[in-house]
Amino acid sequence: MNSFKFLKRICLIVFLIILLFGLSSFLFSQEAAFAQLTELKNVAENAGLGTETAPSKIISQVIKTLLSLFSLIAIVIIIVAGFQWMTSGGSEDKIKAAKKLMGSAMVGLIIIIFAYTISYFVIQKLSEVTTPQVEISE
Image (cartoon, rainbow, N blue to C red; front, side, top):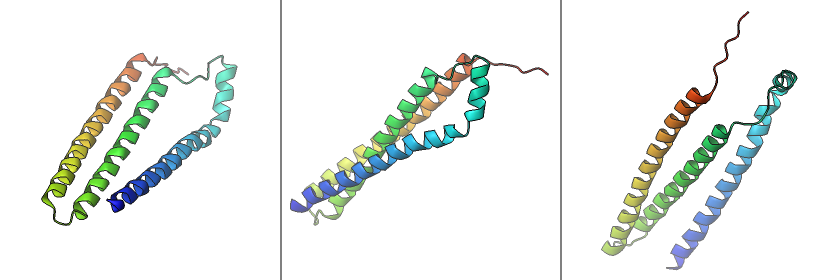
């Protein structure tokens, strides 16, 4: 039992480190990418166009982030179930519980992948419909 508590602590620490680095890279990468668009922003402001981010883009980013977080949790559960299986010592009850946990996590991961695919498709189609198409004539 003591090794299981130790494993839970290790998994929690690894999860928190991954979450910390994932969020920090997410926050800093946007700033670096948008820094290259300074000149384009100046032109847009001079033309009277707003620089706010569209709500659909914010919603899609939140959905992608949440689904990524859920998939990370499912992968950690799969790893924990594998560890339980490997440390079961041949006990049929522990192996059965580990298999059940691993199967549930795999089903969850498949659902998350389908949810990501569906949300990506729907958001892409909605943004195509709602974004005005501007033709530039010379």
